[in-house]
Structure formats: structure tokens, C-alpha cells
Image (tube, rainbow, N blue to C red; front, top):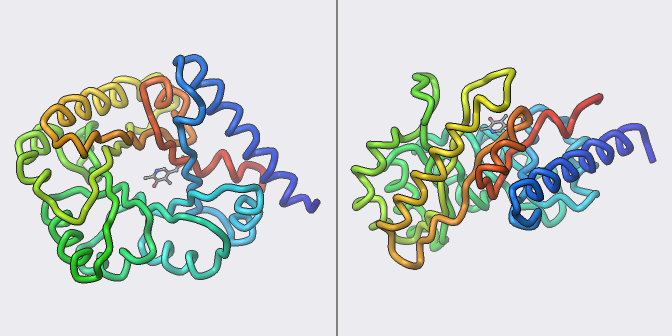
Amino acid sequence: MTRLETTVERNYQSVCERIAAAATRAGRSADDVKLVAVTKYAEVEWVRALVNLGVTELGENRPQQLQERAELIAGPVHWHLIGHLQRNKVRRMLPTVSLIHSVDSVRLLAEIEKQASELQLESRVLLEVNLTGEEQKHGFRADDLAAQWGDVIKARGVRIEGLMAMAAYSDNPDDARPVFKRLRELRDQLAVRSPSDMPLAQLSMGMTGDFEIAIEEGATLVRIGSALWDGL
Ligand SMILES: *Cc1c(COP(=O)(O)O)cnc(C)c1O
């Protein structure tokens, strides 16, 4: 094995072990937590090394880079868009992307609905919620989302599978816990007001600095970049 392969494998194993340990602590099964490997800082070769280890879920925050990388990375991979999507990029994105984590307005949701219908695709999305009040962050405000929920659940041809959030940056992972807990509680409240085929099962929360806390609070998708590329 090359040094690159050894390093990627060691990082990946360490992340998997930490995911499993956090799940166990929370009385959950590690199988209920899926790793989305965030590749935005990674060279294509590093991503290939990770895919060779069996990782299938890859995430990018920029639509353009997701598109370019989807063409360069072969294999049975699914792409996750985790950053802001402009409405004029929806049509190009839909055929490539497996799950959009970052739907942050009813207008964007409506555009996805329209384009998915024209392309005859069913698209899968999560709704991003801004729970920290930081102005530079995208996402629905929790009270706006609750107020608009009646309109949101009318979307056709779009499967709304759950919610996504980011905690504020902090050196102390425990600072993120209240944010993750609020996302879970918001999901529980909205699920009660949703059709039975829309259980909002997915909670996308947790990054390198705070994914263990997120798993303890119910994350089903963790978006991890830096920890996978450590030492490269
Ligand atoms: C970059 C990014 C991540 C991964 O961040 P790391 O700290 O490198 O794990 C997760 N989610 C989003 C939305 C990102 O933009």
C-alpha cells in the first residue's frame, strides 16, 4: 500500500470506530448512523482511496465541484449536496445528486419539485434549519419552518426525508449538544404534523468537531471531512 492509502485507511477506521463507540454510548446501533465523507478539501486521489475502502456516500458543499467530481470518481457512489443550492442550478444538479441536505427555502423546494417533475425524477431532500441564528448561515428559522409546514408537505415528486443543521463553531463539542437536541425535537414536532409516508427519519448533523455528540443526540447522517484527511 502507498502512504496515501495507509493514511486514508487509518483515518477511516478511526472515524468508524468513533461512530460505533458513540452509537453504543447512546444505546443505538452503529448501522443506524451513516457516514457522508465530505470531500471538499480532498484531492481526487484521496477520494479514490476512500472509495476503494468501500465508502459509498460522498458529500460536497459546492454544486459545481460536486458535478466535476462525480465525473472523475468511478464506482458505486452516491453524491450528497451539503451546501447552498441556487435555484438556477437545480436542473443540472438533480440527475447527479442522491440527497440534497441543504434545502433552505420554500422557493427552492418548489423549484426542485418543478424540475424533478420535468425530468421525471424523484428527488430526495433534507430541510436545513438555522438553529444558531448566525446571519451568514443558510437555513429555515425553526419557527418559520413550523409556520410553513402545511405548504412544505404539499410538495410532490420530492421526498422530504428529514432535517439538517450545523452547530456554531466551538472548541468544545459539548456546546453543540443543545443545537442537535433542538433539531431532533423540531423533527419530532414536525413528524406529528406530516403524512404517514413522511416520517422525517433522517437527521443530518455532526461534523469532525462534534459528530460524537450529534450521534448521542440522534444523528443518522454525519458529514465528516477533516478527520478523514488528517496527515495527508
Ligand atoms: C465542510 C462541511 C462539513 C465537514 O466539515 P469537517 O469539519 O471537515 O468535518 C460538514 N458539513 C458541511 C455543511 C460542510 O460544509
